[in-house]
Length: 357
Ligand code: SF4
Ligand code: SF4
Image (cartoon, protein in one colour):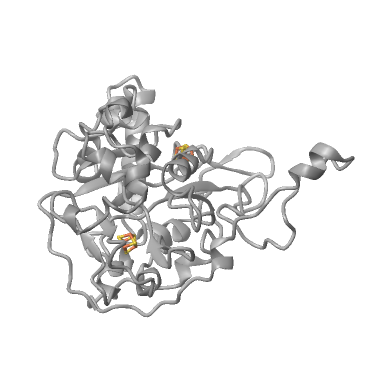
């Protein structure tokens, strides 16, 4: 197994505001068309948007352990099956186009998919609830995937903290996919190697924010260096402390932070507002984000109230994201400046030891 990754000079980080996600999957498609549209990658969604409460993808991933325990020792886990991730399926386009069958349906053997439990949620009307949880590799400060690899094929870039798989070294053993507690690594059966989100490193090197972040119409995704006091990421994580980690007890110190979800007040049977208990149960939010979720939600509520009363709120201004460019911590170049085509990156040629500095 590999040694612990050295601390990088700087660390890129992301903040996703769960109060603004539409569940539109534009992020998933932006990533799919840029990175995982080749043979052997049909089933891969480096970016997923799951509905919570729900089983997510791979199915029941939050219950599979992995990562590290409170003493910093590896927690055993399991390797998800391809069925748990959800296999690629085909729709009956031909029948719909050429016969009297007008119902678009998918292959009936398929049992799971990337957002299979879309919009189901939990609770009873009128107090039912759900929210979306977009997920990518968290480019952890202590990547369990990296330490689990006997080939030292996974590395954390010293200049920006992005975690990458060296495709020339990977032998497809999948210890990384098992060890990652967020289950964000896929297996490519054609090339017999593991693959995952590369945080659009070739774009980032040229000052362009990752595709999933730039293309998000909900403007939920903030990006930048965690030590840059001018970046929205820094302000949301370090100053306002409303952006917190998902399952911090997994021990990998993920660098994707979430602004937790607020929900409307509950209603009584008579349709009156019932503030005696929250719509999303406290225990559920604590299970997801740890006890710090309550402080984060209280700060959000207080700042929203200030705005309702006509007072200024820097936090609300940041979260509303009036100016798209303000979300990206200086990574505001237009993708038109890119001088490498994505295809040259997809070959893995750039994802090699040469990029390890
Ligand atoms: S989220 Fe998983 S794959 Fe990504 S760096 Fe962390 S441990 Fe590795
Ligand atoms: S593109 Fe943005 S709003 Fe749409 S699903 Fe992805 S994160 Fe949510």
